[in-house]
Image (cartoon, rainbow over all chains, first blue to last red; front, top):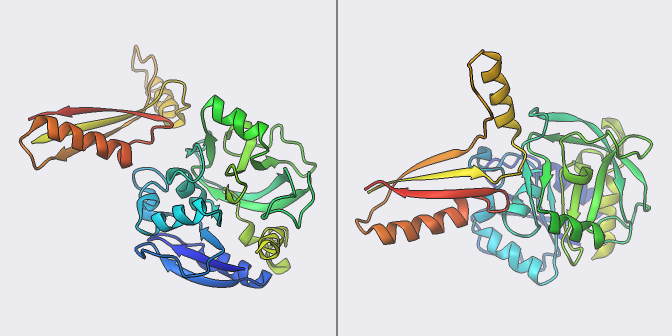
Amino acid sequence: MRATVITFPGSNRDGDVARALKQAGASVAHAWHADADLPAGTDLVVLPGGFSYGDYMRTGAIAARAAIMDAVRAHAARGGYVLGICNGFQIACEAGLLPGVLMRNAGLKFVCRMQHLLVQRADTAFTRAYSPGQVIKVCIAHGEGNYVCDAATLQELEHSGRVAFRYCDSAGNVLNANPNGSLNAIAGIYSANLRVLGMMPHPENLIDGLVGGTDGRGLFESLVRAA
Amino acid sequence: MKARVTVTLKNGVLDPQGKAIEGALKSFGIEGIGSVRQGKVFDIEVETADRTRAEAMLKEACEKLLANLVVENYTIEVLG
């Protein structure tokens, strides 16, 4: 698995996600937003968390038009893997890699805390190390994580198994566990070919028992097994 | 020429910021506030005197960056 982590001005989780990937056994390269091309042989592109361009305009909007994003779109169109975490999910939506948009949290507050997620399916390149219906404990840290799309898109996402994760409580109940007002408590979605994943929570924070847990490891281990 | 682009949320899209502003205004006792929706205004200087070209250019700017058409509408006014 050769992963390329892209750094935009204001990205701040690029180092953490690189560490998580290396721990799982991936080789990791870095690319800059102004680069025209991805390193040859890239299997997975990671759009990391942070506050690209200070969240100016709309979260992820300016980063989504960066030079490197043409190469990322071409990579996705070839069937390459793309993982967008937090600001990376916002960038992926703005770039047209995933449908919908992340709006301001319904409660208007930046939410930074541990959060349980329900793994909807465990047969994708991102989740094979988990089991379907598994509850994992990761963390969230965002002000704009409220997933919104039109009714037809939502129906398509639900009917074709493209919801990757939902917010839930420790017992896996989705009701009343929604931290930001996302439609159907959506925490992450896949592209139609299941090779692009965007998610608001941070699995890369939960890879070391010393700092909160290891439930995030499965995602990176799954990816390393996939390519 | 000067132009103004206004970007607003589409009807039906939840606007928590607008709701919070609405609540604050009502709490000040200002009479007659029905509801508030928040949007964005961009004042843009365009380097052409051709109104049609300016409008076409601003439409492209809106669709490429200024508005997210999933949840937002835009209006363009070329002020001259």
